[in-house]
Length: 406
Image (tube, rainbow, N blue to C red; front, side, top):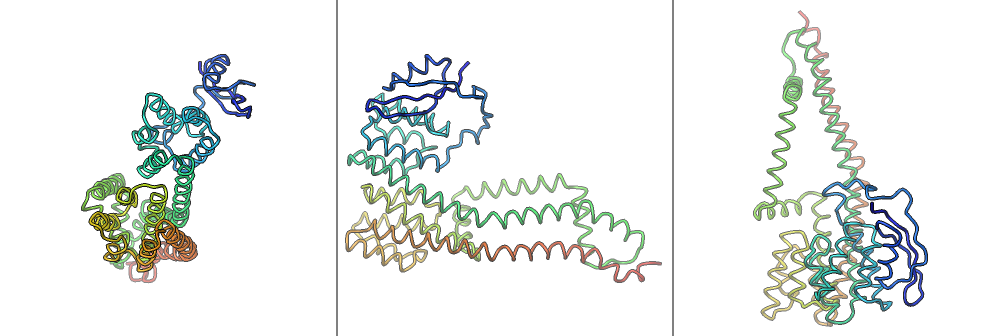
């Protein structure tokens, strides 16, 4: 039965390296470490670990996060810069990375490289772990002989993207939590509380106020057809998701996101930050301009921006300046167009784009903080209004209870 073993070894330069391996016995671990070029110092079982140490859930346990990829990239760059061979570096990374799924991917990449494939080609076959941006930058690093530098750049780019996404999620967490709470309270009141009042008012007779009648009708539907309501909402959600995946639906959804009050500006500035950082990283790594625009178009995540970049790519391929075509699209502010124009004139496009990306990342952070401060009292008001409206609707007949009693 395979078991996890902790090991401590020394490499050919005498440096100490620690990690863990899965094997049937310490002897097999030692044999594998020697094949990797190490001198084993100590090997010991990892307490409480075995083949069944993890509950693997499809879609969750095999998920590869961008944070894991960023950490791996920095380790990769350090090892390459230290003079370790590519195969040895991949072998070490596949064993030491915390993500088992990423470790398996790296091992597959190592096997492809051993068969004669280039590193970028091997990574391109595994888009689940390595995006088009990652592969293009690695390809440029291989061609220029600066793989370590490029890996640090791509790690920095991924880290900034992860941090930006984290800030946006933190801004959305509170309103989503309050919305779920509102739905739970509404469901409980409609299914369990309102029917009791319905029985009381039915025994009194008389005509109930319109808000009360509407509330009781909704309560009747929820209480008697709740599974069907839940199923209908699920089907509507599924159909909406399928529609958004179509070209027409995606375009409409992206336009809607840009026009939503408050959040539309956040989406817009996030897309601008992603555009600037991605294009700057690709150009700095030495990726050709047309390929850089194509990759940026595919990774920006908004069809309005993708169409603008497609037009920009057409202009560049025919000899036009990048800023000229960019200025034809209103989604790009004048500052972005002017900064890009200055970058083209001075030959420092990547530097100017980095400054634009930094500016919009700061804008996003400021908006997130402002939205968080604004949404907290706003959602409390919404919660109070919804629950208060239901309570008032229930008690309206009591204000006229004498007329209801015969």
